[in-house]
Image: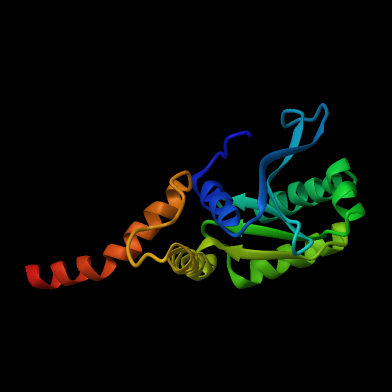
Length: 189
């Protein structure tokens, strides 16, 4: 499996994995000669065969020029729609949802422009989110995983997040010490 390029891609990869998705990162959808290096790829595709759904996710750490982003993302989506991967998923009855996730999202107006322009250029609806908007769901899934693992193992202690999901483990640790840290900070004053 290719390595993700940013910690935000890694966090999302781990989150989808925790939720029983099959995740593939840096998925090449076409290799050809272009001005930008010859390769188009999707940051991650997360497939849940039980639910018959797949999330096609692009992650942006910075906020590039709006029209450049729209142009490159529209090109990627149009290429992906014609790829063997997309055709195979469709033939299996898997619904694809497209998501653009920013570490720091642009304004609400810019998000609307991105979504509208992508829809106009690709006939695809894309959800534009900021990573912080997903954190409550990520935290809820960590807590759910721990609760269900404890019930299954009849244990009242210990973390059950797999060690290989190291960013989720870190987040789990931060959640668990949050109260203690707050108490220690208050005591120190």
